[in-house]
Amino acid sequence: MAKFLRHLAVWFVRGNNWRDYIDDPEMYAAVRDTDVPYLCWMVEHYATPLLSRGVGKVNICFNSTSSNPPPEVTPGKPEDKAGEGIAYVFEFFDAAHYRAQSVAERRRYYLDRIHAALCRCANQFGWDQRPLDEARDRILREDFRFSFGWKKPLASPDRRLKVQAWFEVSDRTRISLIFFDRDLAEQRRVLLCTLGVGSGSGEMELHRIEWLDTRTVRITQKNGRDYWLCAVDGEPEFHYPRGERGDAHGEYDLGRIYLAGQWVPEDRERGLKLIESAAAKGYTHAVRFLECLADSQAS
Image 1 (spheres, one colour):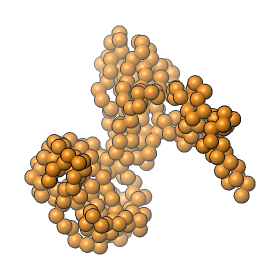
Image 2 (cartoon, rainbow, N blue to C red):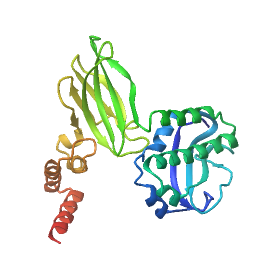
Image 3 (tube, rainbow, N blue to C red):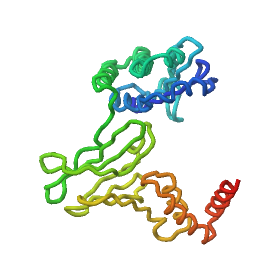
Image 4 (cartoon, rainbow, N blue to C red):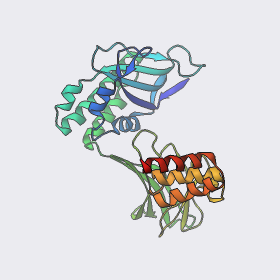
């Protein structure tokens, strides 16, 4: 049983029944270019965890064709009992009205629809609505700017410096390392990586930050294998052991990481060299990738 609500998601759908709804790509297209695509993540970050008596996640289903039925909970795991699991709440979203508004008005409308859906859940399931109201007020007060520190600043072995991962979210999620002095005055900020936007972008993938000595930190991913090294006066170096030790599968995966700019700055030349190396060792996916690339360039 989930004691706290921790996760939110927004869908754009036709219909108002979670058992038989279908996605509404036209309505999604009408709002996907909003300049606050991270808004649901922002509400989640500020409003949760919220004591929810068994609901761990809310799926907010925006639709433009029908009225709002009462929120409903369906089991998310086999062990969930009645009233436990995932809540579905359908909320009317006027896409035409949304498109006709100014940027500032669109932001407010989008936020108000998310807030209204969650308040209906609070009323239906007996939650305390104050965290939801406080989250909404904070978002408005901060004018939709979204940045936050990941965990607490960590002191170096000699206690002279501290380090913290910092998230800045707009059209992309930018994760930086900030080095502070012992009084938490910022000394240096370096970009660790740039990711897409969405709840869990980065914060669910980072696992640990640790000092290796008084000048160098290691940032390990959740898989416990891949990591960055960064000196106080240097730049982050991404390490993918499977690819670095010459494993063909690992080289291919690392090559795709560099081509996509996922976790590292995009580097097409380096990415292709790694994939070519994997193909030379007979790795099938690498061979096919290069064949498809050659075909697309020839056409």
